[in-house]
Length: 449
Image (cartoon, rainbow, N blue to C red; front, side):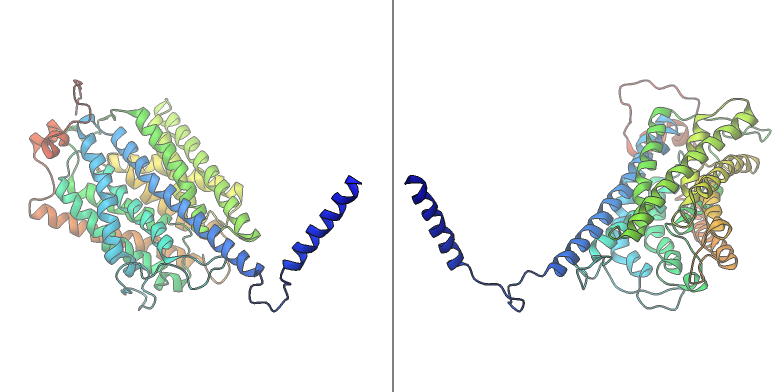
């Protein structure tokens, strides 16, 4: 009997629930729009993917700070860390106010145009896969601008006045980098010609590398870097563990730099592309490190950690232009060539008596140019991109633009007495002379330079 009443009660409850429910028809205004939900989810995933990539690229600033300070004298550590921090702080403000509008003007004459101040919006016009919110697009792009600027810091370490560096950082972030960036990524004349640079071997790294070369030439070498006979004298960095850690951080950050440049991950084609880019990036880095190690081992009879570290970075720079369009084996070849170029570049600078403290020009300048040429050698692109003529022109035009503009700027600063610290300050160290601070207060540090 009890069981019977339980069944009756359950049937009554079900009837009441069904009686209160409102029928849903296809034309009901409250119908759940599955397609819209899918689009919004894809929009959220793609934009979150780009935000994470932007954070990884911003994390590269820590890597640069460690590499540059570790490869330099202890007495200049505060100065180097300070410059890296101000690259980001000053750079992000000026790129917001001026640089972004110069780089992505919308319409332009192919060489120079200005679109707007600031970012110009919060969300995309439509929530769908591949649509980017203007805010996250700017966040990703400003991380690249900061990278281009900070490359110079290590090359001019130990003798450049802090104020002069701030002027340089402001000019390259607000004008020099955005203008040549517009030529390719903003739809300018190089893009129209068919020049291809997926993630910035030329647009980012060669700009920083050739700006570093200009600064090193105008500044002149550090005191004691070359003997009276012209032969280079080693001036070892004070902290190779920190420098090595910086290289690993840069390697990790590059997985935002290159895969993030796909700008989307939703959909099979995007996902496959991102994974190919990531693997190619890692393979090129490894090949660069191995070949740099072997090259110095053959030349100097001993493997050199600093050269291998720069070889890893050179491999990363070299693959950045076409990591999306080559096979895994081709990525290894590109990285290997870059590793050799780093070693040859250092030898060339020594022969020319140019003091690039951390090897910024060989790593970012030479390997950046190699990345642009490698597009024509190995890449396979549609719509006329990556042809030999365009790659040669772009691989020359962008470095020349960066070198000439920065050479003029550094020369002006030198002419007005703003460029180089005094001999006494250089020998004592920029940390005390420029900032009145010490990175290792309480320790007595002995240094030959």
